[in-house]
Amino acid sequence: MPRGVGARTDEWSGLIDLIERVMRDEDLLPQVVTGVRSMVAEVASLPVADIAGHTRALLMAATRALAARRGPTEAELAFVEELAVTRATQGIPIEVVLGAIHVAERAIWARAREIAEAEDVGAGQLLDARELYDDWAEAVRSRLIRAHRDARAEQTAVRRDRDVEVMRRLLEGGSAATLAAAEAGLPYAGGLWVLVARHGDPRATEALRLLRSDRAVSLSASLGDTVVAVVSSRPSARRDAGGDVVVGVAGPVGAEEVGTAHRLAVAAVPAAEAIGRTGPVHVSEVASVVAVLSRTDLTAALLTQHLAAWRELGPSAEPVALAVRAWLEADRDTAAAAEVLFVHANTVRNRVQRFTHVTGIDPLGTFGAMDAWWLCRAWLADAE
Image (tube, rainbow, N blue to C red; front, side, top):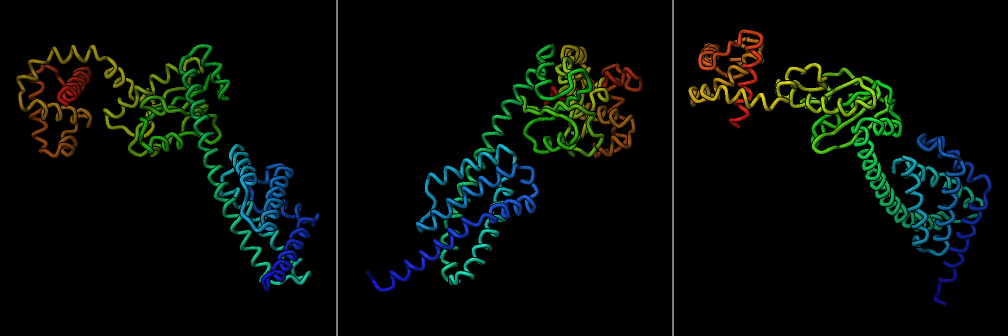
């Protein structure tokens, strides 16, 4: 036997005896569990047996690895993956899981140092054991993080698919909607609100979150090019929610009418955009605009009726349409419209007069103003 090998073996045997003493300490595990539950609030609601069982299993696996001077085996890592999936299912973030393990580690190694002093185990020996443990723990943490992330991703995908399916049934109306509302925990007799924003903009998701009360039951899903949320209480009145994003709102309705409310909330989005509104916009606030924009047949008739006027205006057709639309959207405030268009106020007046002359529509009248705005918007949309 090479010189010094026997001494090192004896020293390591002493460390193994120390580890076994730590494992046999009947007070240690309850103290560790109590410390974890008191210092990591997010796991305090878990059963004591749950925390104790996983802590004991990790401690035994670490003990076997230290005794054999090796890293974790695949069997031990399989248990780590099981722990990660369990915590992910319980909704506990990975940071909290790692924090709880860290608290347990500190308590166990503190106890090991106490026993080491009593047994005259050298600090160098304990440091060697701790370094070996740290290597083992690093491999365990890596597998724990990866498994937890994969489990959360899978759960999110399953939940998203479920929410989409429930939302589709909710929008069908009738008895299917009533059953879907019950499945989602939503009241089906009344008091449901539908929120819709365009999909693909992170601000849209944030806007929907800000408009929903934390106390309200809600269901959200991405459908096509929109994000839809159905909530059980009136949305927040904050006008700043979403910034430049429009959120169409409709309700309150019963579960069987959610489909109709959804169509109205969807229609409110382009209507609000057409008149420069942002934030939450209830469909009742843009009812006339929704009615105008939804009648493509009447829009076509209006364009055909005034095709000659468009041709007569020639190259000035678009500037005239922009001026009339801006003037009407500014409540016939010529100065305000001129400021928006970066032109002189007289230019706005001349273009409005030109529009009146070639179309025969009087934008100073209530219904003439509506037809003028509708026609100018259709002209500009057609030109684009």
